[in-house]
Image (tube, rainbow, N blue to C red; front, side, top):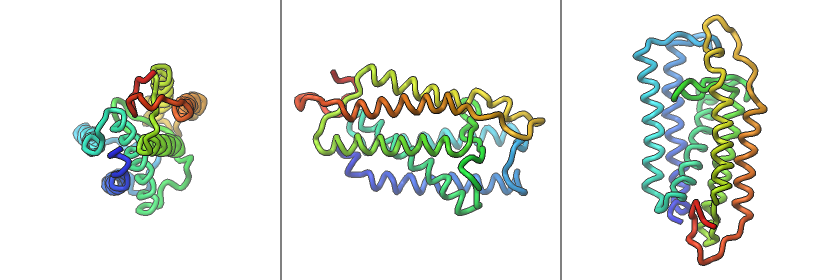
Length: 225
């Protein structure tokens, strides 16, 4: 697998991209949170919010663009994206910790993303998701590089999708309450919903790793038998 051979460069790229992302946040917090980031959120002009949304979309486009270059098959590119995105997200917080001394705890709340609505949650939640993406993606890429076919049959794809939707729901359901200018603290995080989503994804990964595919099958097919 070409993506496996180029994985060190993907990681290098993701770490550098994470620094760029965290540097922008350093500037924003100096402007809007000179006394430290906290809820309720400081109001931002609509034009600045639009710029931030565009920046996040551009970041995703750059991550997607680089994995399209290193992968030769759709499933290989998807796994490469999982690893690259996970490393980028993990090192985003590593760089913030080094540059700002933030977050003070993995349970500190953050605004995680803005598309299509603000995602909110404790830092621990995206960290767990990113670790799962990196580990799962790397294991499957390594397996493919060894010539050991793997497959995500339709039931496993459904499990993955269901898990991803539950995780996204845990981040987005309470965004209106958390962003209220009159509320000092965010609502309790939906750990049950989040945990269910992560569990479904991990189950799908474990089943995919344990499933033996005949050597005559096409490697890395997302819809094998």
